[in-house]
Every structure is written in C-alpha cells, then in structure tokens.
Image 1 (cartoon, helix red, strand yellow):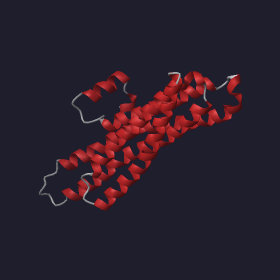
Image 2: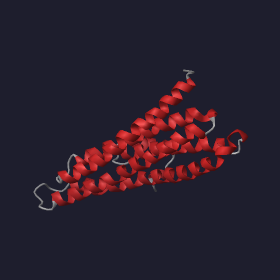
Image 3: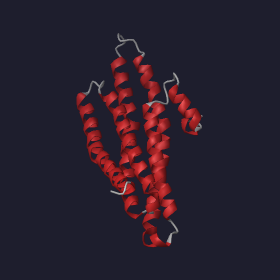
Image 4: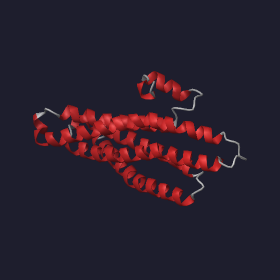
Length: 207
C-alpha cells in the first residue's frame, strides 16, 4: 500500500513511529501538497462569482496547474520512501567492501532527486499563490496565506533532505552543483512565499 493511501491518522502514526519511512522528506511533500490544495480551495470558491467574472479564465488555469502540482507532490511521498531503501542498504555494506563507496554514492545521488523535485514543485505553487492572492476571492485570503507558509516550510524541509545527502557525496563538484541549484530556488521562492504571507497578515489584521 502506498503511503499516500494511508489515512491522515495512520500516516501521522507512521511518521511518529520507529520506522524509516515516511520521514522528513515525506512530510515535506505532504505539506507541499496541502499548500497546493489550499490554493485550489481559494480558486474553487472564486469560480462562479459575478464579482470575479473577469478573472474566471485565469482562475481555471491556476486550478489546473495546482491540481497537477498537488498530485505530483503526493507521488513524491512514495518516491522519496523508495529512494531510502537502497540508501539504507548501502550504509549497511561493510566499509572494507571495495564497492561500498560507489554504491553509496549512487544511492545518495538518487536520494536527492525526490526532494529536488519537491522544491521545484513548491516554487511553482508559490507563483500560483501569488496570482491567487491578487485575483481570488478576498474571503479566502487567509487560506492563501496558510498555503504560502506551508509551501515555504515544505520547500525548506525538502532542502534539508537534499543537503543531508550532498554532505556525504565524494564527488564534491556534483554536490556543489546540486546545492547551488537548491539554494538558487530556495533563496528566491522562500522570500516570495514569505511576502505572500506578510501581505495576507497585514490584511487580516487590518494594518
């Protein structure tokens, strides 16, 4: 059974228990999926309202993109879990085994892929949330703000799961390439998510 098919209660229980997956990566992907869902919620409550008729086509496009990203992130929960098994096995190989370094290097690189995809997907969600804040129903702005905060947390959590693996890579050039790619996205989009949340906070607090 896929992890994403577990109930919320069971998933949280697994996360809390002494099992290797899900872990931080899976939790990050779920947070990202929830942020996309909140964006969609705001959009769905906007559709059909006369007040927002002039942006209805834009909202429909946002909804289509947000749904794709939500599903992508849910799939990444299990993709991240699948990458952990070969990494766990690689760590258990005896250090005197001449093949250990090569196997571990490959497993570490593979373990970076799911969280990297999470970061990329979250960046796209933040763009959608920015547009939703501008065009969506003002009654749903708190949900847009919550989506931005969740997305930032998801992105930053996924980045930690990248860095914990690049730290141990023997190929430092490849490690630097991955870290630079991660930092570039993180530095831009984390601040953009914070800006969305800041704007929402000012509105809901009447400032």
